[in-house]
Amino acid sequence: MGYSDGISAGSFKLGADGRHIYFPFGVYGRGYVMDEERYNRVRRAIVSRMAAFLILCPLSVFYSVWGVWPLAGVFLIWDHFARKAAVKGCPVSEEKLSREEVLRNSSASYGRVWIWFMIAGSSLFVLASLFLLFRTDKILSGLSGLAFFGFCLFSGIRLLRAKHGQTAES
View 1: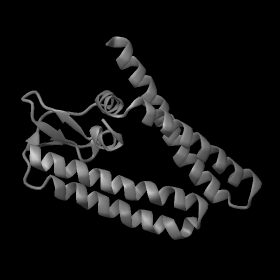
View 2 (view 1 turned 60 degrees about the vertical axis):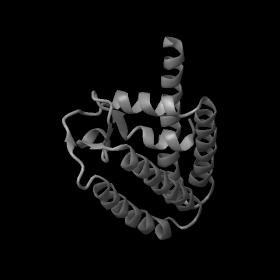
View 3 (view 1 turned 180 degrees about the vertical axis):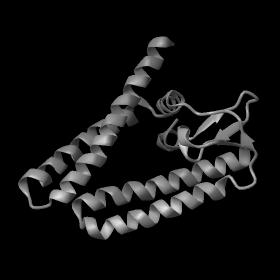
């Protein structure tokens, strides 16, 4: 599976009856049962929105934070309504999504090379953010970069550990 599978995998699970259940707000919301066609359409939409977000975040670190943050706010509002629209008319599932399932599904979908790429890239951006924080006057950019890419690094390490646990159990 590829990178796009890993992005969307944490939002879905297979129900007891074998149907796809989408959790638009992750472990904090309810799940909605989807047919195969809608499942594929929603997965593609998730990947598209995530790609847009992943372009905005590095821009906010290395360019004007004040110029990009309002765009990020608009994006988050758009994303919220896009998630709600994706489940309109879908039956609600009684099943819940746990954090462990999100981690397991995501790590199973990402290849080991992608996870290592995420860790290496995040590490470089953490170092760049530290440089901005301590060697320039862009303190806010450094802090926001450190927070975002530190989170990405932490997530990558968790995915790698989960992936290693899967191969050890297999």
